[in-house]
Image 1 (cartoon, rainbow, N blue to C red):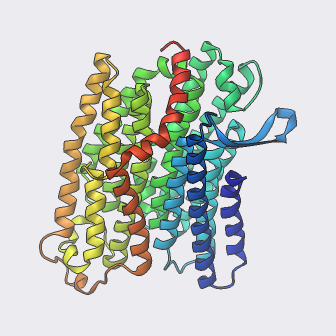
Image 2 (image 1 turned 30 degrees about the vertical axis):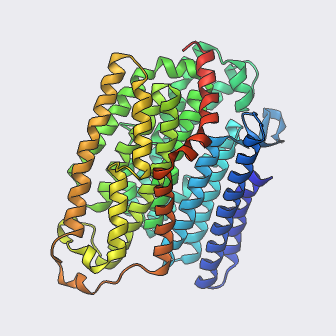
Image 3 (image 1 turned 120 degrees about the horizontal axis):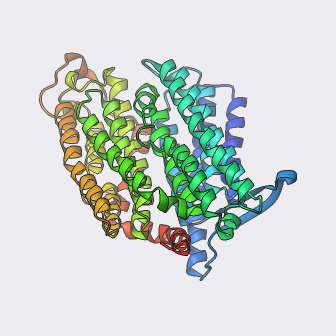
Length: 495
């Protein structure tokens, strides 16, 4: 029942938060709940590793199944493979970091942390679900808290950004729901169970028709070009922890859905639309990189950069090679960690300087050496410096993509590789202008460095980033069995 506890713990924590009488009690409850989540995920990782080492070759481990709604054959069916475990670990790290970064929230503290914990419950439920209807249920749970977090605690055009984000994500959800219903009614067995569907071989015509609904629907969540426009506005207006959740967790729901649902269940559909997927991914990578060069707001820089980096995820999925799929999952984990770290650093700077414009900053490293160091590490990971997770993930995607010998796909791979140069330009420019040189604003001279909560949150993320960068083999071994299962479906389809 460890998987059900992953959903149960944040829900109970959220209820406890509503019963708290002071802001201090709310913070303590949120921190306790997030630490318990991290402990559960560590236990899950250990148990999963032990099962694999003991020779358990089941595709999904720790399965639990019970009827939820018998007339439609909807089951509460959960289970995990290495890909799911990796995403659950990512979620636990970001939840704890987000709670710590939000420690000084004063406005509606109880409601703020309640929504954060509710969002984490939706993410956990999504990653463990093996029933398509239940998966969609948790996907929807993860949408509404984002709208409220941005609309109430955001900044700038927060109402516009929150509405745009909610409408676009609900539009993506509608496409996903159409695809799920198509799979349910036209596969011949009328089941939502993903393991059964993967073995039943959905008719090719059905795959060709409904694959775009699923892939585009999840792609909206994963910043698929041209449905990415909610990303810059949503990130720029969101409070710091909500930005961390959006980029670190919510956008990964899209990539995971494109891989686990669309590609895994409909390999013929994935092959039919492979060229379009790769083209859109390459455009997103290059467009996101060049658009980032034009930005002067730190949050917009990280937001457009996320569009580019999420393009690597979709490129890896679209290539339909095992190495590329492993790289795509590694990129999801890496991007989730580094973009959460970047937003945390930006949020700490904004809280102290009250600006995100790079032309108004300078010499920050002299004033706040810890925050400056965090900013540097996040930036260097983003541009793919060896020793950080970004390098290991992107190189795996590139190597897997190059295994696809089609000339047009190799051209797309070369174009994606070229984006690294553009990324280096805007990252180094931002680092130089914000951190180096003289202090441009005299009011910044008295700002303080990071507090204990901010140090704890950022060090947690940095440790994970460096560990993956130095020893990516551990994450690769965790992901490989799940990637092999997906490739078996692709191979059975004749590709």
